[in-house]
Image: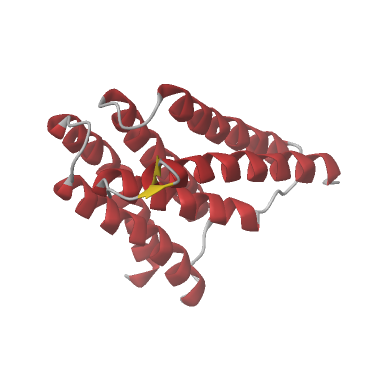
Length: 179
């Protein structure tokens, strides 16, 4: 049974993503705490941590699991940022850039796989994912903290965007150097 737990955690993230989007759209507020989607997103984020950790610990890592984890992360971020844009908590250009980067890097990794090249996840890619998850939390919680006149959630969203493109560049560099 435990060999299925990591994949089930990824499936939870996949299925919770549109539910969180629905809850964000139901709330529809431009500011204030969004408690229910925040709690569900918090649980989903932790499944990302535990699915990989348990798969490695129990030695049940599979290609299917790696695929599900990647898709779950991208669907999670995409659904939530679309919701944030719809209710005016995140600018559309940020959402478009984040989602575009995810599609481009996923396509590049698929292309590399077809060519027999392996592009492993980059350490900055893991930082990027963490920053995206933190950004989601800060936007959902709507902390009233400013840093030099800019809200904390905006700062974390911009950091997530910055690290998205820095890690994306790393993937392109790894693709070009892979043999």
